[in-house]
Image 1 (cartoon, rainbow, N blue to C red):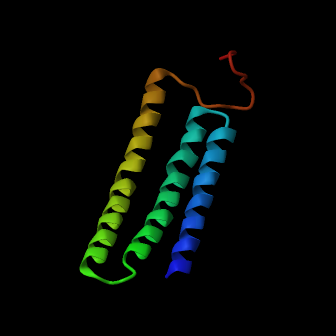
Image 2: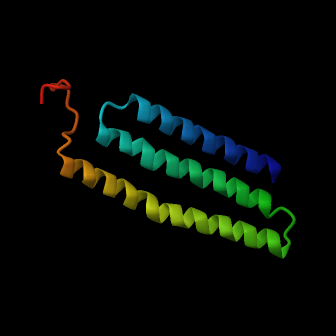
Length: 109
């Protein structure tokens, strides 16, 4: 169980690192939201599953309830993360931010 939890934590860190690199490397506001929304959610999923497995190792009632609470946090993040990303994109559209294109340089819009 410890090995599985460690592997899931490493996978979560890999997703978080990929999301951070994507946020730094993508050219505009809209494309940066993709790694922020997708990869952070996947990193959180695998990390929290690892914590739930680690917490439920001894199969006592308290450990199982702790694992259940962790899985409820995962469900909450899966509901709120796409909603928050959509709200941020909507705010960008309302503010007049244009999507990046290869032919337009910054400051020449």
